[in-house]
Length: 64
Ligand SMILES: [Zn+2]
Image (tube, rainbow, N blue to C red; front, side, top):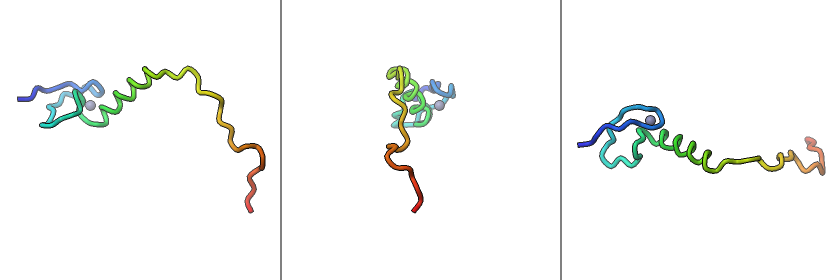
């Protein structure tokens, strides 16, 4: 017998199927969302480095 679980992401109560490998999550998407949250908290980016320069400034783009 499987116990119904509450998905931490969407708070949906679901019964994990046999071979369910998503932990407490109801769908892979919910698992990804939670993982993403966790990662973004862990790897907190203080400052995104120097702003990307569009083009090298060597030559202006002109249609030929
Ligand atoms: Zn969910």
